[in-house]
Picture 1 (cartoon, chains in turn green, orange):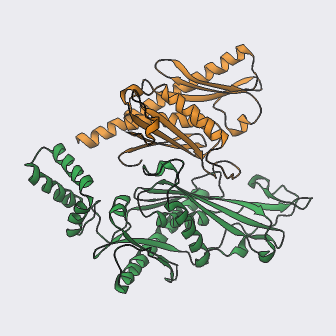
Picture 2 (cartoon, rainbow over the protein chains, first blue to last red):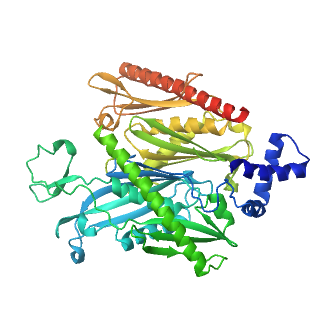
Picture 3 (cartoon, helix red, strand yellow):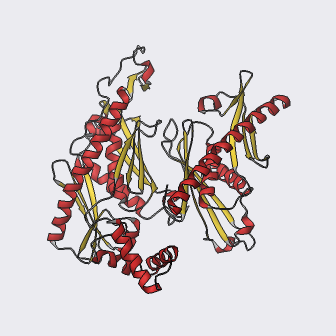
Amino acid sequence: MATSARGGGEGEAAAGGGGGGGAAAEMEVEAYRRLFPVAYFERHLRESVRLDARPLASPRDTSVALGLVGSADGSALVKFGDTTMVAAIKLEVMTPPAESSDEGSVAVEFYMPPICSPTVRPGRSAEVAPVISKQLSDVIMSSGMINLKDLCLINGKASWIAYLDIYCLNADGSLFDAALVSTVAAFTHLEIPLVSVSDDGRVVTVPGELEGKTKLPLVNKDKRKLMLNNVPFSLTCGLHKEHILVDPTAEEESIIETFVTVVLDTLGRVVSVYKPGGSVLAYTSILKECITLAKRRAQQLRNILNESVSAMEVDKSS
Amino acid sequence: MQRSSVSSALFEMGNTRVIVAVYGPREVQNKSQQNNNQALVRCEYSMANFSTGDRTRRQKGDRRSTEISLVIRQTMEASILTHLMPRSQIDIFVQVLQADGGTRSACINAATLALADAGIPMRDIVTSCTAGYLCSTPLLDLNYVEDSAGGPDVTVGILSKMDKVTLLQMDAKLPMDIFENVMQLAIEGCKAIANYIREVLLENTKQLESRRGG
């Protein structure tokens, strides 16, 4: 697949430039790519390949690593090809408000620091960052992945607030998808710290080493891991004329104008569909196709996540 | 680590993990600051909210970040041959992922790697290391616990081959002769890091060469 795509591009350039040497032909291809991106892109689509030689319905190599950040209570690193996300969760004790005295809360923030892309200027954060923050927040709540009552410590007095910070270290397309996987992975890795109530009624965290030695009552000795139900997984597809491209890269995202993001949970139910405008008006058949592709991707992501969890458990026990 | 116009480096010193991305030389974004004789060097330092023991909501422009950004910029400017790239801009973005003392030094070391990876002409490799003095013993490369013990903290940045000091910062009190010892220790640390960086760059170049030529 890789050789045919390269051959296609170079063949064209060679025919145009009279078959120059390897390096010269490569430069012509690069120039064509920059000057006429849409034409270059469509030339690939006609051969049913994409700019990185992937088939249209194929997502990039995905990897998940848990526990990267030692100072956080839960963390994960996710890579979709070159797109890299680091998610970390820190838990803090707070007093719950009166109307939800038996619930904790989750605060999600998505950052795109200038290192992630040359288009992000310092002083002015990327436009998509708060949009993705909000989307993640909504999906976490509406999918019911976390039962906020699980975050309660002492009814009416103390509960956990989970601060989830996601940093995009490299933005190469499909940012929401990667961010959602990193969120799920970080919550899967999360280990809730031990707490006990001190003499003056304050809830204090007990570091692991003092577990057997503290005289104070441990409040949550058996609730160290969060139960995740209905875990959501998403897939973003780009629609260009009549083609559906799965998991677009940043280059593809700059050419394609229409995207559909489908979020499904473990039972295959649709949690959310997001199609923010765009020139391609999609028929229901196209949306159904996107949902089918999303189902396949969700299964794939679930497997990758489970593999990394078992890998982590092996590391722990060894 | 990343593609084309960006060069990046990840540097770890014990538990301190820092990522640096270098963009440029590219067109100056703020034309009024353009310099016709040399390149503009810009640096921005930021810490991830989860990088330290307590999660802190950090403002972008807070005093510590601004001070460290300035220090890193001036240290790297001492080495970059800016007069070779007039009317252009070099951006150095630093993101701290995990902080356990010596973040400033880790940032400078990572910046050197990223600049070398970007092919930006420099006079020499700039490396940095910290040293302190606790319980009558000079200590090299303090971590957070050692740093907060209240003893002095000396940060040194050198141009390794030229044996010149470009950065020197110290807080707390220290008698002159002990200071010389501690500074000497820090310089040795810098030299060791420089050797390591040189090895890494050589290895990297060999890989690039084999990919290109092969």
